[in-house]
Amino acid sequence: MPKVTFDGVSVAVAVDHLPEPKVLLQDVSLELTEARVGVIGANGSGKSTLLRLVNGLVQPSEGHVAVDGQDTVRAVRSVRRAVGFVFTDPLSQLVMPTGREDVELSLRRTARNGAERRRLADAALDRFGLLPLADQSIYELSGGERQLLALAAVLAVDPAVLVLDEPSTLLDLRNRELLRRTLTGLDQQIIMSTHDLDLVLGMDRVLVIDQGAVVFDGQAATAVAFYRELCLAGLETPGPGPR
Image 1 (cartoon, rainbow, N blue to C red):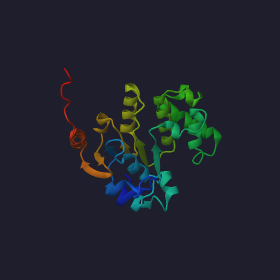
Image 2 (spheres, rainbow, N blue to C red):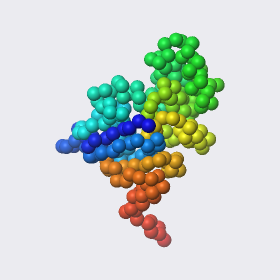
Image 3 (cartoon, rainbow, N blue to C red):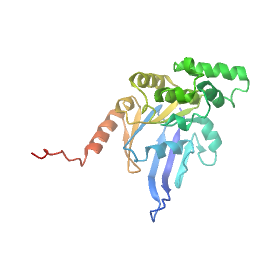
């Protein structure tokens, strides 16, 4: 199983109206070797920043991130060949007019022969039940179909690590279950952020992120219980309305 390492990682960005950089992630040190790693936390907590560090979409302001010893800044090309990334919004990564063309595009480096690319693309699409939709415009597909298409395109090149940023957000119940079963059967190491606490319960290890810090790191059920308490802390019970 691959090893993803965070060594004293912080991320800060300049914001026009603030005198100091905004800290998105603070002093994270982790060694991720489990097959299934979940990441949960509130919106704006730093989950997406953590995930985008894994394939070099975000660079650390301090510290280092490595995938199997390859630094995500100095060896970004090698890292991106090893790490597939699926965005929350599939239109962020679907660039071709149709699903088949998009999957074939992802295969251009590994399959130089056009007929071979077509065969591999069709197999990737068929895996998700998308082959009947292969030649439709991506804008004619539902949000869930686009998300599954984005996943198919990433898996077509067989990355060692699969990073998913809230992949179930646009999925209905049927496609969410298809996603769960697909992830369960994959050989890749999976690092996934999600608000779907049922989905994260199937992970080997779960990180809870709050205000840019890892505040819990452990078993899935315990992590979910910790996160529920964190979310409820400080909430006031609404009183009766005016009479």
